[in-house]
Length: 103
Image 1 (spheres, rainbow, N blue to C red):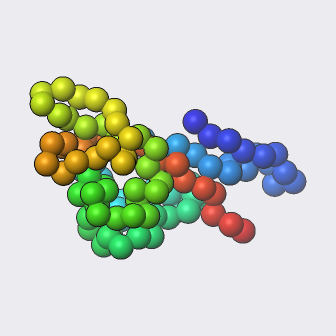
Image 2 (cartoon, rainbow, N blue to C red):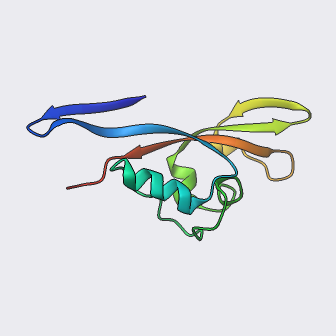
């Protein structure tokens, strides 16, 4: 899902929703984002961190996350990032809203 503009250079994406598994490293995500001409996630987490681990602690990653898929009490469900609880949720995946890189 993306929103964009048409300019002299053709179709440009302003932002995109990225569906990512929790086990993907921040470094791999950033490689993908860079290749798609989208802004990389630069927060407090090292590139080796998994998205599922970093999401509990990284405010930048949290601010870009629109939905989290978690396992809770034997059920898979979608929650908002603010509902995330380290004691009762295992993160399976997340949806990030990222913007296009400038220039």
